[in-house]
Image (cartoon, rainbow, N blue to C red):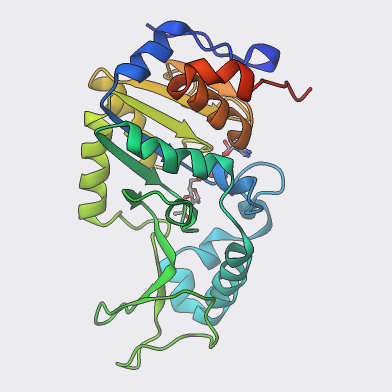
Length: 267
Ligand code: OAD
């Protein structure tokens, strides 16, 4: 049964039936998007001030753009690496890391390439769109892991080819083992939390539908309604760094919730 969306001062008034189902669930997953890292200072892609408003994705996030000007693409990725290196996980990433221990099976399916979930302590992380902290040789497949932004632009493989960021660009499929692992986790989830994604980029956007189709519950947290909101069992319209810890504490620590996590509406 679809439950109403909650927003404004009632946004954390989660129906008890939903809380109960989540508490009883053994298999869960979280699908995250750029919105979860917004409170860590990493910009989102869409909406006012979003990356795709400022930059041309055809030049920066396609194989054709890379072939035409790998230096430009690397300058942009170096800029983003520097930005992401400065960022720290926020309470939403930390809550997700904590959630892992409460379920028999738990997977973080993230569209983000920033590495924040692993930094926060999540272990089972499926990076759907790759990682900004890896480079790949388009010719021989060599993978190089980074722990700091690249120095030289463009970086070269030992074979002489220009390395590319090991991320998924527009028009490229997800690596098949990543797509399969994510679909399996989504389909077997009794509950999926969908946090900070506009849910417009496929196949990631189809993952909550897999959960729904196999009888699972979908709980969305986003600052605004998305394409997914009409499918979700519950949508909480609030910032992830506030709403997710509050929701999780309500689920996991009901007796402590009222005293330790008072809900203070932010408007
Ligand atoms: P988007 O930028 O499309 O969407 C970010 C979502 O986060 C929006 O729906 C916002 O309303 C929401 N949001 C913003 N701040 C928030 C906050 N503090 N708390 C909760 N929600 C918040 O980002 P994605 O959905 O991740 O792909 O975009 C999907 C893919 O499109 C990305 O992985 C990237 C991009 O092009 C590739 O580069 C292949």
